[in-house]
Image (cartoon, rainbow, N blue to C red; front, side, top):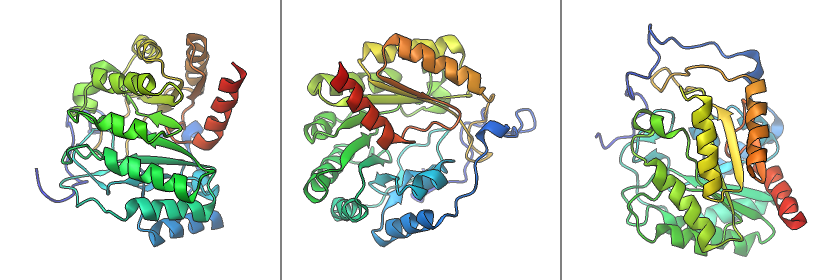
Length: 312
């Protein structure tokens, strides 16, 4: 692999858009306005001032305008270059830069400055690091607790594949929500998420809950990649077996024509059906809609989850 970040090389050519698998026009229900509010500009300026990366930008999230207008963002630590090349992801792939030792401090100061109620911390995959980046997650959590004690913290971690002890480091720092996305159904892992293993991802969520039952656990998948309904329902059952509290389901949107193609656009009615089924299966909360993303409305959802736990 080249040592330089790479956003242009084709990934999994059998799945990318081509004359036999053309780029589909987005239906009206998932079109969003381009960002441009004053609050959006202020949030962007703050991220630049502190040298922070956001998954909102790196993953080309369609909700960036709404979220940043509310001064809510998902910060991506450990740089902006990933050691993997998932077929759905727009983050650059290559050789990552050294870990920024000042990153937890800069992140905590930005959280304190904006007086955030809830912060989501995610990262690229760092298979090059002995702990997969777990220590940087823990340092970030601990520093935010010191500078912004009222802010609740959600982490969206990599899978820490073949990194013994990494999960324990993150859980010991006691985030309020531990999130790791399964992303898709097991059958599609070889083409969509080839560097990961479905049951490893499921297992870290189960282990996180076992290590600290007070932590909310959360996971999500994308639909529209070629999965069928029975496969989605089986993933729900697997998640419930792992005692996952919160499920997110959203429409996959190809970032570019070089990424996995959208096989179909799932209708709003189908998303509502998934939500109904998920709640019946026992999830504390299900966010299921075309524009749902793992961190979209995470602040509101966490507040609602906490109310539900207190009521049980």
